[in-house]
Length: 171
Ligand code: AR6
Image (cartoon, rainbow, N blue to C red; front, side, top):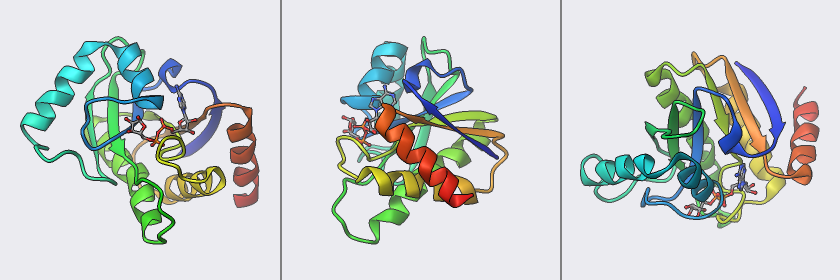
């Protein structure tokens, strides 16, 4: 799988699936989640409510992923995943990496070939930027998947530069 770094807004990405940094409720929020629901329209929330009524009455657990329509967005699907709220416990990193690998597994089930990811947990959930980038690139770099391109979308020049540096460091 090719890994591309892009600076910009995840909702503007022309890919098969975009990943949402959601919360367990699946019922919306700020950051990436807010932008995706605003851009995609009410169809996304309707499918999320349906998922809560059926498969996830207690919410989507951290580290897991599930797909809905992307509504009016250019992408075909939104893959919702829930990052851990940063606490500094070492065990949490596995949950964060699982967001990336579970999202790719859902993309495989859908037949999505190109997938755009935000930097999961690095905003409202408080994960330090450099380690959020390192976990994202480690998870994407070792994933076994039929997806041909994973695009990591960095919001702002700072995040983009940190990601470029980490990519070079990893070779
Ligand atoms: N496109 C790309 N990246 C963005 C965008 C955007 N439009 N907007 C923000 N980012 P966050 P989290 C970056 O907070 O930390 C929500 O309320 C942002 O700078 O969206 O996983 C949910 O409902 C940061 O680097 O997600 C949850 O309650 C990264 O995306 C909670 O926030 C993730 O920031 C999830 O928190």
